[in-house]
Image (cartoon, rainbow, N blue to C red):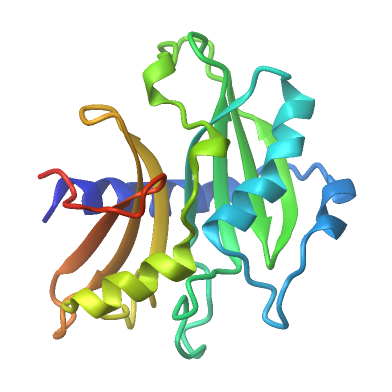
Length: 206
């Protein structure tokens, strides 16, 4: 399995557990965004929704990564087929510190926003952060490109539908958006990577 897909799965699993943390409502930013009837957001919309609460936490906060959470009901059809999801985890930090802040979005609204700093953790180097102004492409258009390339199908039972993740590829210094799905017989996860600034296809690192 490709390393990038494995990393995405770890995030999908581990971040899902954070929803048990105590909630802190941050409703003031939510009215700025149009949410469709299914309360879904693209990856870029989710980041833009979460960012003001991160700046409230620390004015030097920067984006570390973003990933949708696999919480949709199995009965739902075509999950993520429009490039949007209902549930997101958006992580922020402060460069060269171990400060960590997680914003959890449920059904298009901020549900929790918590300082999860672990004081014995190593500092996050500057190279791991993503500048929001550099995110020029979004998950709906990149999903369309991935589907035209073929070989990626929606998950049926676990990591359902199409999943999306933004992270920094520090080896290549690229803001990488992953479109994650499965092969046709649902036996192997597959991912297509794209440069978030240029839209260029980037093969995920092995």
